[in-house]
Length: 534
Image 1 (cartoon, rainbow, N blue to C red):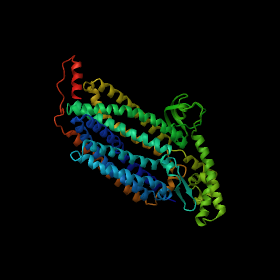
Image 2: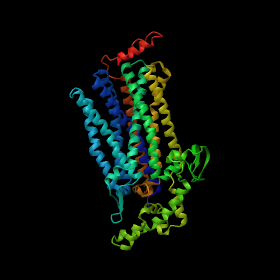
Image 3: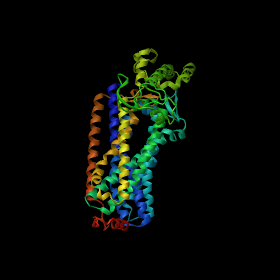
């Protein structure tokens, strides 16, 4: 049996590297399409200021993308080094989308990003615009294939377990790539990236306007990003609801933990606005509820019952008992794959095979047939993820999403009224908003990944079985090494970003400073001046 400390350290290492890496991903996804939109305006209008804008934001995009690639490559190696049993168990399925991501999307974006940066004088306007869109599509296609792989871990469709090879095998490629979880997660994640880019652009543009620098670029960038952001934020909130609905159907345990719902309540159930969940006592020590809201919010009906933690544990205990014969049959088949009786026993119980694995860690000598009712209950309790972490991770994400929507609504109003430069408090606020979407994205991933526990592949492979047999010392050393290296990467990005932002765009007479303000009461003149600049 793998040392539980090694398993926990393996989880921490992958979590740390994933969270570090995901600091770069959303900005890359969103900024690529924002640059494409800016360049589209340049091609259609011929105004050089929009080319200047595209070149400036592309510099920041490349810095972010380069470090995102550096941090992301390590994660793929970690599957083989730290999660060898997992890699062997589902490698036939999990490896396919990752290979496609590397061969198609990654190489497409990496190839064309060079042309996007250095091809301004070598390509026509339309050719360069096409290259920019290829970079944007390549970047987002990378996310698609990675999320397809992740979604298999959340909702394992398109595959079946072969008791002869003792591996999961791909059964339907179309089911894998068109799974409801994969499609909902891709759209939600991509649009969250657009929100991140919009706040990043408005924050830097506001910084320039507050300091009366690069005004022509700052005004236009702010307005485009504000409109981009308000639509994206509304979309990410709406599609987040769809993702929650899909996820709740596939993982009721995640839903119960997310809402700190310990007891199954008759529909329509109450919604816990805030609560203080206690996993040990299996209740909320404190809660503020809104009656009748949770059921329509999660199920889009008023009558569908939402399973609570009590139902999840009871159902898990039944499935564990049913899965024990499947694990026992596998033990026989590993020695004699032609054993007809063992194969028949496996086929009768294979749908609960993963739950049989779940109790193995508690059974005497890891022999599931020796598992006692107490062992089964311990394993059933494990079927519920960390309720406190899930409840608050989800609410932090949603709360920040609503705050960003309010921010963008104000940004659009002020920008449309040509009044944003007079709102000094808002210009001071905007740069401080830049970390908010990054924090929201991180908590979104925490919600998704903590909510899958105790599974690496939901319902099939427990996390405790998935790790490699390393020593504790090795895991501690590698964890410290990765944290140190990735912290250096963050410092490098911040240093380069600040350097380029302070330097600003390469101005060629496109309004580096603000024109004189019209006299008080000359609002019509101010509007006319803005129209003239556009």
